[in-house]
Image 1 (cartoon, one colour):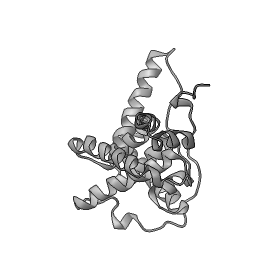
Image 2 (cartoon, one colour):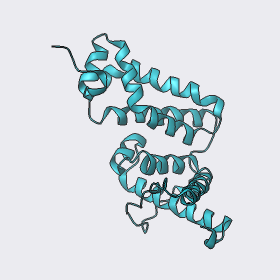
Image 3 (cartoon, helix red, strand yellow):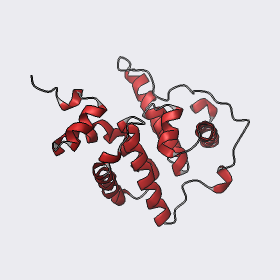
Length: 203
């Protein structure tokens, strides 16, 4: 009986195949995590020329250290940890700030809630609504890019990758409460930025 295709393998089965000598199966690891890794690299690293090398470094580290993966988290989360730490090392090496120290103060009054998803409902049947939706997405995207790298990353992981607080905490090694509070602060900064730049009626 033939083995199932790589796309249907569990994390354990996929890792076993790779460690068993099927190096080509690592391509499936890349396919399963490239969206996550790309988002993290793009949100944390401003310089476009450095991004491909960092992505390559991330997957090289994952391949070399795969034997040490203990399945204490999902494989994608583990790769996300490598991506985050690799980007963090890059920022430290370049003496770039991940988050201004004044932003790092814990906000105990920040409510812990799951905000509404940032994606808009499909408006393909209404060209005018579709254009309006794209405009709003562009406005929000531009506002997100004004956030500090850590806030950009957390917003991306939570709203675009749809990871849980716990998964984000595993990736960033931040406590759950800190992740929630930083997300609250990021949303607050987005709101202030949008209100300052655009009239309420325009939104």
